[in-house]
Image 1 (cartoon, rainbow, N blue to C red):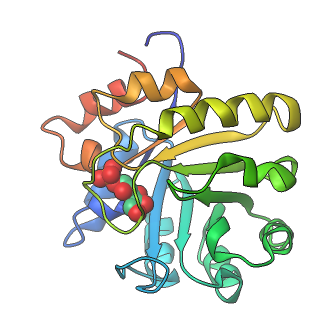
Image 2 (image 1 turned 45 degrees about the vertical axis):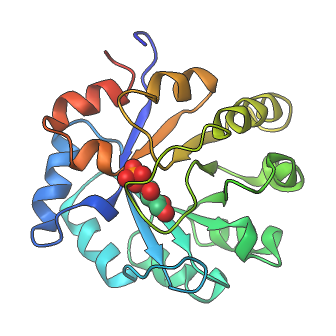
Length: 220
Ligand SMILES: O=C(CO)[C@H](O)[C@H](O)COP(=O)(O)O
């Protein structure tokens, strides 16, 4: 879709951890805007990844925005550690936060941008009470926990609904979409209202990541 530049956030989940620096440089040189860091605790999601120490290492290698997605229970316990480690924006799950409003204010009080993510089965309407306080919403288009899953088509309607909601409540809100985004479906995701695409497999496993980045950013 020529004419609109979408933010691209390669997901660290699909990076080469035997040479993380090279993966980050690949993303930055391909024109990526954010480095998406998937933090999983083995409780909120059935997988475990990494903590603030890796964020600190990633931050040292790049000037891209460090976009940290906390797929962990009771994230308030660790938010400060992730901001100190270099996260520019921190996204928590609505489903993991009993006091979501307080958590959002806490992230912002630390000087980071605040995001909320919702799982595929969670309705967009639940975001309404906090939408005006948010910098971004991360709509999950797969059930969180693993890279390489198939895009759940129902996510398109949720992007459209959120796009309509933000017009009224928070026009500056960034809509990010995460999971199963590919070169084939990105045009539809962007047309529905997404501003940022999280791409693990579609970027890091592409035959030509630079070409893939152009497509995912809506430049081709
Ligand atoms: O949050 C995630 C999984 O929980 C990942 O960011 C997401 O799945 C991206 O990977 P892919 O593009 O391969 O689907």
